Image (cartoon, rainbow, N blue to C red; front, side):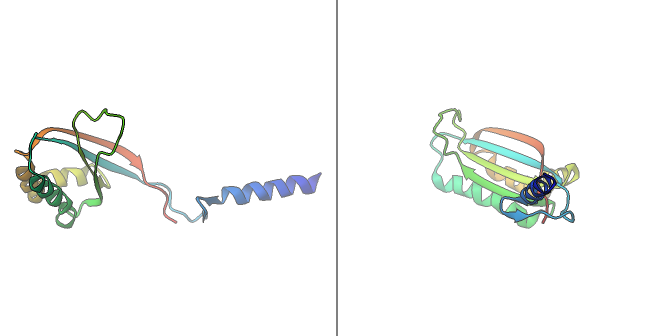
Length: 137
């Protein structure tokens, strides 16, 4: 009986030591909080594709210009639910903290970008939220 309990404990311990096929050690860094800044655009009707690409390229260039950006993603809506209300493009910018976001918002490169997109969008949604990054292994 004692061997069965020990074997079960070792089996459970081994199962808990792996997540997504990667070994987790006690030395792993704890999850870190990061601030995500999500921007969704509904562009003006009839806007030329070249002007949409100008916005995408300008936004995608910001991580090279603003050092408080620690992550950047963007994409177009592919949902088949039909609930996007005309919003077609999403940009997600990640920061370590609120100060990083504030620096980004006030940065001259961001201000220049705002001038690029201002007359091309019909509507914009900005949504900021805190989340946890996966632990460093």
